[in-house]
Amino acid sequence: MKPNLRPKSIIKKQALVRSIDDIISNILTFCLPPGLPVQLETLKTDLATRDNEIVGLKMKVDTLTNQQSEHQHYIDVLKDQIRSKEQQSSMFNADVS
Image (cartoon, rainbow, N blue to C red):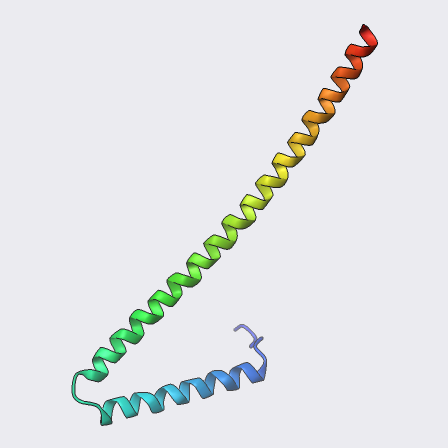
């Protein structure tokens, strides 16, 4: 069994959110025309799915941004190495001449 590593304040907030969701669900069930609560739940599910997709896409963008930065750094290192080799070559050629 894993120990609970979340702070108590987060657990309390999650419980409060669940309570609010239950209250909203009851209001939707008893106060709205038939069929509308089902439509609202469907829309909430779709919204949650899209939110998850957005989070996934943001993670992908962050990953690609980091990769691009690493690649750019590698390119800069290679350019520096080429410049160094060119300087060595020109110095060697000057010595030979």
